[in-house]
Image (cartoon, rainbow, N blue to C red; front, side, top):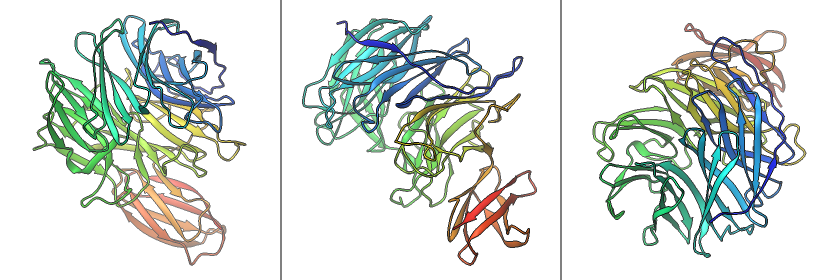
Amino acid sequence: MKIQCTIILFVSVFISISLKGQSPTFEFLLSGPRNERVSDIHESDNGEIYFAGFISKYPNYRIHRSGLIGKIDEYGQFIDSIVVRYPGMSFGFTTILPVEDSIFILDGMKTDTMGQMQNISIVLTKISSNLNIVETNEYVFPISYQAVHQFARKGLNNNLFVCGSIYLPPFRMFIYKFDKNLDSIKGRFYLNNSIDCAEIKEFNDGSLWILTDVQESYIMLDSAWYIISETDIPEYINGNYGLKWDTDTSFYLAGDWHPIPPIEDNNDIGIIRQFHPIDTTGHLFQSWGTEDTLDFPGLWGALDFKNKDSIFIGGTTNMYATYYGTWPSWYFVIQTDSMLNVRWERFYGGDAYYLMQKIIATNDGGCLIAGTRYDYLNATEEELDIHILKLNNEGLFVGNQNDINIEIREAIVFPNPGTNNIKVRIAAQYPVSTFELFDINGKQVLTEQITGKWGDINTSFLKAGTYIYRIHNTDGLFETGKWVKR
């Protein structure tokens, strides 16, 4: 069934940088009078970049939404965007899937504009590379179901899965399978099982592998989609996830890591290399964390690679569960080899509240970060911007950096201004470092050695004022800046 919708051009403001003749890097900002939020990002074979999500107006962040699709070139130059509206309904895109030459399928969820977000529909939109809508089909849920989340993944034989969770309560998983013409092949709601769905994979025999979030488990379904087994994810890892299969039976999984025993609301990063879909024996594990609450993986995808010897893991540091923090935060990116050994980690931000949505590996060996930026220092109301970074294979910008506003660091200090303590976050490649603090006259007032990625430094004895910090070691780390004590 064709769905009538309104499509309008979306006006953007952006900043970008590039250098012809080598792999381009850039910073791109889509900033308008409304909330702009990205859910997915895709790089085509020719280097063009597509992003999808929604726009909304304060204070109705999650309702009264309209779907957003945008396109930039390989140098971060804006090309075009459209907004898709369904009058009287709330709608947003979640996933971009390339399906054939110059054609993409986007999945989205449509709901009413009431607080309960009922009257749910899956909306599948086939779109050309020029952002022209080719076809749209809608599949309506029972009226009493409440929306939680959904996503789309490719299956076998050009089929498409749309999966997610509804709330009855509690969470209930649903799975839909569609053919390449957007026609429904099969669907099921798991109303008798309190589970959700965060990832899916189809095997050659028709069986399905499901990754859950709340339950922190792998679930196997037979070819008739009946649950036949459930296995706990090892190492206390749960969402938000980043998942990438490197063979038909083995994968890499990044997510929130909880030390043993689990600590409530602990947020640090763990990654598993698992050699079997459900057999967790013999897996590899690496973590970048201590008993802290400040690192959170990318909300819609925290891991990706083109070559598994160059794995990118990303998320946000100094983030708490909000899009509208009134304090600085940073994206972090870690690169590992196939055996999970860290090559480097870097931090990006500190001048606004950033929140990473997704990280993807790019064709040239670098990566793309898709996130949101809330300029709380200058905002008059809660208003998000879409923020995209293109980095090279070392996590750096190359070429003329005059138009790059975001800072790159290997160590960060917060809160700033602060009072009785300083938290210091050190990049993972530096196991030992030294923190020094000087008063405005250059007199050293403290020095402390930091082992690992976190340092918590007592400053209660210092007078209010401005200080200079220096963080360094013999392996190449050197960061300086100002810290203000109130």
